[in-house]
Length: 159
Length: 399
Image (tube, rainbow over all chains, first blue to last red; front, side, top):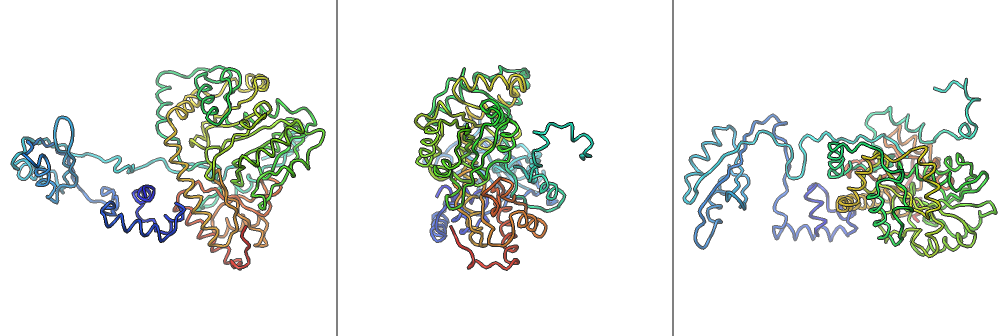
């Protein structure tokens, strides 16, 4: 099962037949495993990693360090939920260390992102402070290097 | 370009070596655009970053000197540790020599044990250097063709049949390039028996040992009585994707290593220090990256086998290395014709099996050290090619 997940994480377009062949299983079995993993939300979603800059789309993203005071009974979760429900928020992690939540926000302009932080994020009850860091360039994301210069340099034929 | 003007000045031993069968094919393929190559005998992975990074650091620290002729002691100790895990113990101070690739180790071994006229038994199909290097060392290569019926393993009968009073050594390579064949412990024990009976030496090239997918690799030197008469060769190129670093080693009884070191110290002095640093890092911290690559090869191995089956190319299941060696005899084409037509018509490069010696005439070597996308496309194109030649699956006998 783990092998199937790893293969799909790397390339979600692999067919059940290909995965079956590669892992030495029956196609039907692979299909069933994948269906089960989808049903129990182990596989949450299939998506495509896109280099938007290359597509000519200007996007601004920022990492916002958020300090919050945890609430009784629900801890950080309730505050986190109020934050991650915003569609502008792409990723939220609870962190150890100097701040509590690492929030990745995406917008069209810097002003838009800054305004979102100032008017939506910072004003949430229990949010003590925010610090915004704008992303200047993405080199690698989710294990993939965006502009990998390490192309296949092997000779066409070697013994 | 050779003009022939100086030909007479060239040592006949060199002059008489036929040009490599791969060379002509390379020239043809290299000029074409859009070729998918299954003709590459090296990993498609780049050396893992931690290995490269350790070398950059070593250069920053100014590690640019010669090393001991034998190689860095620390590296030899790691190699000894690895081989101990394979069931055979060597003294890292006297019984291990670090070389410039297995190629150098093989040349040293042959030059060390072969006297003029000695016969070296070489199971074929085999790596392209074995026969010429034996000739250059003054030996007489005696080939034994393995067959698809025997899953390209060397059998005791076939070995026994070619032994003469001049037989000096047996040159083994399992897992095998080009066939991908592996030999299990039982089959190797039968070979060891013949070796013992006829007092042969064995040069065992085990460069593909970690790329074994069916069962466990058996190190030939670990068999009873074989440590003393085996020169074990191995290296880092295949398992750690380090072909260009050129680093290998030989492990054997100290008499052999001392003799090999004599040649090595005057011809090579030592293997490059940066490559030795890389190898050390590979052995100390490279296991998980290496195992990931091996898992990838294994998946692709299954993919190409299934693909060949679907397009009607009979192929025995290779248990090691990263090659499949399908049979193309039923197409009515020779291996060279098949490979050349496939390249010209479908832009897929494979290597005709005959360049690897007797036994490979009706097969082609396909390396599956390529991306899944490339392998899938290559098999599609090969399927199209076979269909066009009018060969239905029903005419194919699977083995």
